[in-house]
Length: 234
Image (tube, rainbow, N blue to C red; front, side):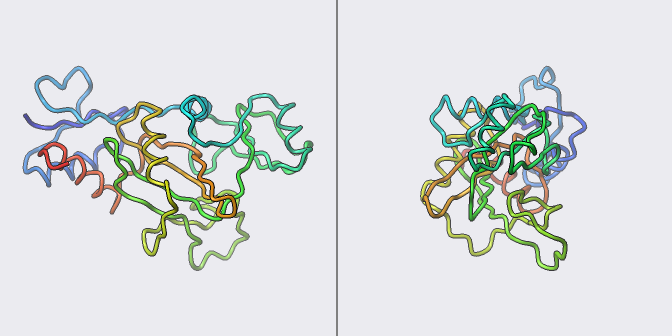
């Protein structure tokens, strides 16, 4: 049976790139279809993303290390008053740091949908998981040539950080906790953001991206994993 891709959003550019790459790998046209159009074909479904609050609740229920969180502004202000840095999230479904306010004092804590206690870290990883196994690991590093002031607490492209694959020393348990986080959410695929507190030797899951950007090496990694499964090689 031929393979089809079932995206959460039919207009998704990542889903389109994935389908095109799979077409080239398999030697036939891999279509993007709605769930009711799969028919007698093998479907690879890109899951719908889950908001950050729901993810954190699920991680707690499954015993996966994640940041302390609350939806109560009073509790968040108490955290700040006791010396913790508070991440105020005004948006529950967002990426690239959108809707985030960092608060160091109670007065800086703003009304938000979700508050998390900042986790000090030396490293931040992204682990790509497919079908119950980690297929790729990336590490966020400072981008060369970035001249603006850099906030190490929010490590994204706008703040001068990029994902790298070279010379990574993986901490023990990194891949395992990533697989557990994806499984806890019921996803078949996911890019897991994990911070590493080296002093405490502790890994903390921040979130799972259900539809990671499918480009370059990441796209090829996922396409290969899907093809291997379809052909019975995984």
